[in-house]
Image (tube, rainbow, N blue to C red; front, side, top):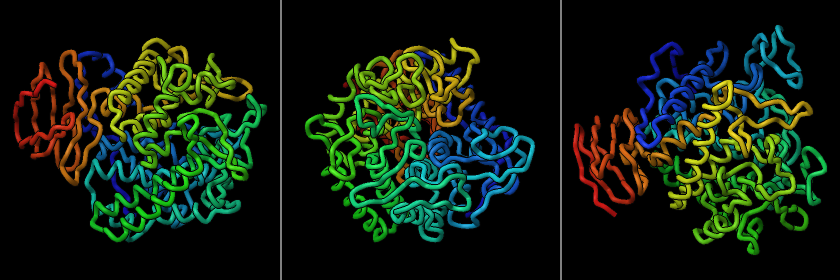
Length: 515
């Protein structure tokens, strides 16, 4: 695919949206610092298929699929300066093209990478069977940019999304692509997929344990079918269908919608626990449930597999204070779980992780649960802000402790504090959740020139955004005292709490009806 040119030295601040939230203006301090940290991870490295690209803030000699996909979900707000979706070329081309990435002189490389500090080492895709989120990332970016040319190349000429999907569908045993740093753990079986904690991204999750608590740091039950794996394949099929529809490829869209429907049937037959009203991982041999409650159970909701009734039952069951609700929601493990680490989160045993928390908020939003999604987003953002304000260094962290405004600790023997400056996927809170759920601008569609805004019922002072770009539209939208003031470069349709408003090019003021 064509490399897109970016300048690291370009003036990027004028390209990012400017939130307006009089109720908590201090959130903008964290918002602005997060963009600065993200810009620090814009890396220009000759030899990469896409350079500059977004570095995930971990180490020099590895790149990660799911980190990069999640990073693209905030980069989409300044696509001319932050190559979020373009960074995915660094996976597509080595896996389904050249097969190689360049060498670098390693400066920051954990021992397990095999690289020696100060010596040349080849960059590798760390885990080729990381969560397959390419299609979701591409769809969310396409809706912001309206770039049909890119989608035609992606789906019709290169077929990268289809190739990755099919590669996983045919992965029945171990594989080690030349560009990858590790062998695969993903195994396709009738009715599901075997996998592993590190490959799934939830490294030391207790999912798959066979006793009341996990006796091993990583249970990795060899019989377990991972709910997220099958749901992410379903999500990919659904998103490929949607992308094909955006470029008028209706026959292609129908093929992938049919594949999605097959996944929907399997997940609802086998992974739904009617007794609890919740999705779980299952045993691949006897079909029994592994009843460990984590945000991973919201992947089938994001994929559109669940019915509205199922989502209602999931909320009643899981979003209670003793499970995944409470003062800091959507932690990586239910609070009442025997393996929950209340002190420091122990990585995926209670920490707040922005990728899975963001995913779950988007899942709730997809089913119209806007107020619950907003409540979760506000609590998460507040926790990140308090950590930023009260804990030194004042930064954004890889993950967060569940019960105090501080970073979590890892699961290694030293219990080290997790990585700072992680922008990185943790930018999803101060940027994406802030814009999309706290303020409420939850979905743009550049192809249809529409923007959906779930405006909070109770607003203190002004709320909105300036310098918001989608497609060829550049808009300011501010609500104060029931009055919408809009300025736009092009006409577009604003769907405000379900009511359509035609926003003209230029300036306008609209008195909003009281509900």
